[in-house]
Length: 198
Length: 198
DNA sequence: AAGGCCATGTAAGTAGTTACATGATTGA
DNA sequence: TCAATCATGTAACTACTTACATGGCCTT
Image (cartoon, rainbow over all chains, first blue to last red; front, side, top):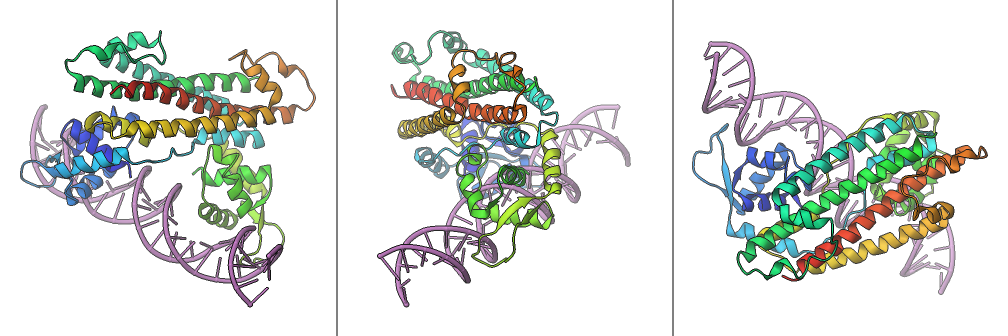
């Protein structure tokens, strides 16, 4: 049940139409929760039905832009969901499965596929790093030096505390993306090196 | 379309009944492709229908053990699938989504959830490391020292090349698991440190 | 007025999840 | 013989995917 909450989050960050949401699910939100426009429109309908969001102005005509905003009940539902415990799902990765299958039936040119994936992950990593440079320039500079410090330094300034907490959380999410892509790039490097001398 | 191929791989490694498969999908195979017994039985039926596998001996009675083995057509289908290109799926992680939601509605005791996940991932990592010690003792010892070397050294010995290639691939998959869990443990550490001073 | 794009949808199919049902075997 | 457990399944539901449909707007 994550999609409705992803949409609520996106709409709280900025009220949007279905198409705008679709685009945002191709970029920022989509980096950790993807969705197609069909899913989004259907879910917008359900959320409106449930009274968690509402379409803003007036004419509900087909082919007409419809902008949605979150109602108090929607914010409450999201707040509740954030606290809910939910176990991490086990990994489910077709590429790892294919490697295991290759151990039985032989590499069938799988190394080319590994190289292709490596290129894709390198590109994604570069994109995340650009975003970090753009949106979190100060933190990005410090990131290389200290790993798990982060505590005392920046918290001192009283001004704009709310915004700084928000930005800190967003940066954490981006860092997860960067570290995950880094993992893939490194592992694929090992995998290619270990598989080529066949 | 990964589940049928996961089952074919498992059955090639060792012919099994539905329940045995279910158990293996809770352990080794399940580390990168999980499935419930309902999924497995349904898929076994489909695979048998398609002539890719067959039940071994005789009496197809309800409540009776049924052991399956892979037919040549099944091996061929798996071989073909290994070579098929397939793009990596974008990340889809509810925990990251909740962090992003928390940036908008506030942490609602989310730090406890982060600590809980950290413990779970630490346990999983320990389990993977045990498996590595048990199944790949030589390689595990070398792993700490050289990262992306792996090329020249071990490949020289001609004896048992088939088995060694198989084991090398299986080890690669396990290493992916280890490195992924390591990522989570490190990132959750950062996240908790960055979130606590709230 | 025609073609392209913006915007919102419907329909059908597949995969995965949750809850329940049924028969066989074994040990108390 | 009763309960527990092994083993195989059915049914209903939810989430996601793929393909297609419809209408409005803008440019030429």
